[in-house]
Length: 605
Image 1 (cartoon, rainbow, N blue to C red):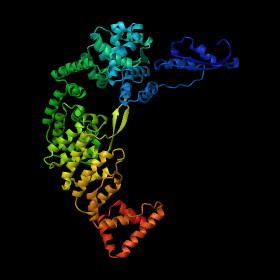
Image 2 (image 1 turned 60 degrees about the vertical axis):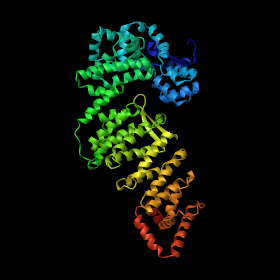
Image 3 (image 1 turned 90 degrees about the horizontal axis):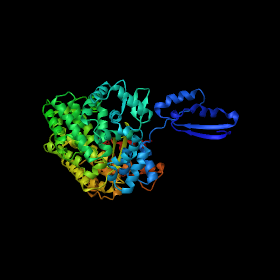
Image 4 (image 1 turned 135 degrees about the vertical axis):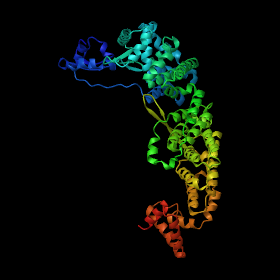
């Protein structure tokens, strides 16, 4: 900048520029005719040094740039590649880990090949992207450097003062602590690894970290995956699980998946033979790899439990409800089989066997079943099998509806499964949660599930213990928005009408019938049976007059509507004064009815 003027400078990786201070100093030369603005980028590990260099010469502000969020990655791919399919976008988000370049590369492959399968195993994409970077710096051909990278990748983030067990492990492989630390410093200089405050170490790019797991443990087999799992699981279970999930889920390579499973089983067998205290935790972490043996282990555990003769109704409800959120190792594993259709029946049988031993844990079972056997996006595609099989198993164990503790679970699940839309949360990246809401899609399997539930309610509606539970489901159903689920709603209404018709003849039965007719009038369902019930009950005319349901629907002004209601009431009682006794009896029968109480308050104003 030999001549004065207006300048905008962009300095990338400012920590690598030896003349940074002299360049930035131009910001202070306004009296010499310079108008200079500077944008500087610097990685986290070098931020403190750059800030220190700048503080003495210029005022500035810092702006933290976070990795792309999941929504930003989706938007990037949508706007630049025109991909709008949610399954494709979710897979690209999973692959990209916030890296825009990887997202675009994956998106290009998906768009060119027009199949989701094309971005399942992205080994070749990673090879093409990262191999030149590693080879340029000599890391790709240096086994010691690769082992260090693989170790750091497995732990994700390490603190150099707290990994003595890692130093011992590497020493057995011929890599000393000094070599390990020297490799870190060399790769830090090449900006492959970030080092913060000389202690915290992490691979600079999460996608590169995932790639190093594959290269070191699978492609080159420089580290034994089973030995690494055994060493690190004891000290850091969560990091071990995260790394195994990354290996399996990022690349989705069948050969890699089989390899990882075999390595996990090796450690499983060792810990089991050693009768290790870690074995239970290990089973919980990796049961999907060895599902049948896990079920055998849990069966033995459940059979060995002492029968608890305490009914959940006799336990403090608030205390039990709060305790439902505490983890239960047996339920944590068994409910995890909800999408394993090969083993789900055995898992459900064990869930019920466990419940029969521990009825006092009712709210805990409720929590796990509602969250693990809930209806999700994929339920439609697997024919609602987890839900159908669970309901069938509960009914089979209910002894023709006589075991009330089993039926209590049925009614709770029925209430969930009969909704017209479903919401659930899933884990996102970096400890985030994703809330998903889905509308139901009519299908034969969906109707099989709902028919099974409605018919059970129909069969139990006249059993005193279950009346209120059925009524609770019906009252909830009245509140659902059915507009986008018309076919399913009409399907349900046939069973609902049958159930209401079986209820005890009373004004309450008529009011419930009237509520359904009013709420679902626009479905054009006929409600012939319910209309007959209402017509046969003389109290319903009085009830409708008092609450104002017989008003002229064309009147929209509130004051005019209220006057019309008062006029109808006056005419009704004036024509037969003895009807006041009917009104007294009605109020006695329905002292808690919201609409009736509200009507009297309004009419008395």
